[in-house]
Image 1 (cartoon, helix red, strand yellow):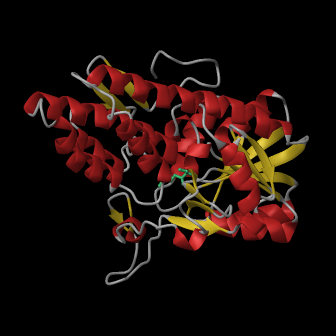
Image 2 (cartoon, helix red, strand yellow):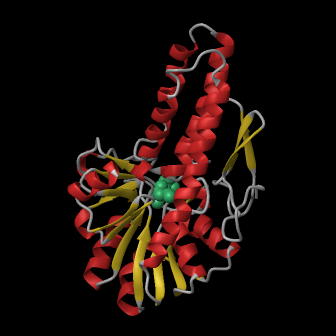
Image 3 (cartoon, rainbow, N blue to C red):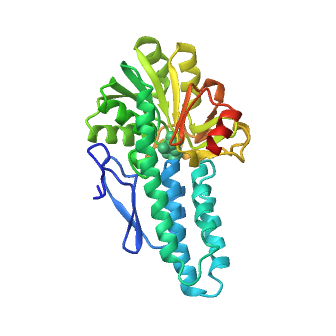
Length: 351
Ligand code: MRU
């Protein structure tokens, strides 16, 4: 736990800049071990993004912004007259670390746009911008928390998926931020958190965060969600996003689409919570979003334990796309959109 916590429900920081380096909480080790890793160069951060040391769309973007500071420091030291061009390689390595979360390329673009006017040592300017990207994300999450919580009436249960909390963002969380704010307002009795195979972000990370905040929850196998919606009074499904296309289609953790279909069938409302840095106007529809496929070993084994039959093959898409038609509300820091579509999203992004 780091010391820039803002309040009781915002006490976890997975990404932090300290003196001259980046610190990441190793999310692969949670909840058993709370271990932090120090990073002094950008290639190692790219590797950490690929390997899920840091994960969650906004957190990946913030880590990449700080990594660009590390890359610029190296580049400026080695090639004081040509540091901008030399930076390009490391920027590309970072940008390609994970393909679906658009916050990664969004943060890198914002950092690189700032390079243009810099004369002399680029580090102070870049570090300040990376810190701004980080603090703006936290502020956006708190604001979205309030906006989303206002939409929730008193209910027994809310469903969430994957981990969208402090660990997945600069702090506080997107969907989990709304859940934190709604809990503070006494809006629900219990969170039902999907386990989120194969990386178990629900069981390992969301349960860890909810436990720290004393928010009552039950873990639910991903395959039990339809039964849960049929048998318990559930007010909303609340999820985050890795990329939102211009027409409002949403890429998020695999299993989100199933939740949206089930929610629609059972009359449960479906909320997506994401900062506008997750909206990609250059991606027209969900079919244009690149979906990361990860190693099949993640499906065939649990941790280091082989589960599947010898010789078994597998399919392991990390994300799926929920069509805009299935989304009741999109909550962003710029405001709330009911039944998102191309026109409403364009208008929001202009505002
Ligand atoms: O593979 P992950 O753990 O990076 O996937 C994370 C998600 O799908 C989250 O729901 C999304 O990034 C939003 S996090 C605020």
